[in-house]
Image (cartoon, rainbow, N blue to C red):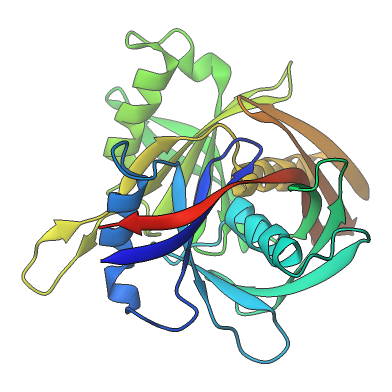
Length: 289
């Protein structure tokens, strides 16, 4: 099987977009195909999205294997469409459809000095809710903030909770992911280690495996991402909810760079959530499955 793909780097969150605009294969194959393409001995990346033909009013649709909303994959698709149309000299607003959202999402794409890189401002669907939840940690229950974005929930773990764990912060969070997976309904969730003093996150994203009619599991991933768009947005939304400020911009550092999050509130209601980052076109080719 051959898959036409484009590999992109949104804040080093290496993303593969597979072209399925002609509906050559069904969505039921997405989890397994994602697992193959992400592998070290294939194209290799942190995540995979599938480009589909959109309805009227949008340039294209991005569909993730877990049906979640992914900020960086959506931003990557917007940059790709501008790059393909060679609209590289001016700002363009790209309307897109995305899994996890029932509304058209807009991304403003601006050229940079690099003809294969773009600055992008992506409008993120506001969280369905932000609330404190209790989760098990080392045989006891602890409280964490959970941000429910469409199709993906992000749990914010203060760095102090993880840095002195016996297995180190990453080992601690991976153990948490394994235990919390049974308690989180969404097919995709993230655990964000948050360092308040440095405004820095270290994001882990889990996409649960799919189960076929025979009960066999396939696909699924557990990835430490170098840059996480939805995780950055989740943190920005949480900080806006506790700040009391009408307009707030948060610079979120992460291993791959910085993603800026801007929010607008009307009273207690969050009315605007957007992330700003840079997307580079890295490669284009055919993957063999």
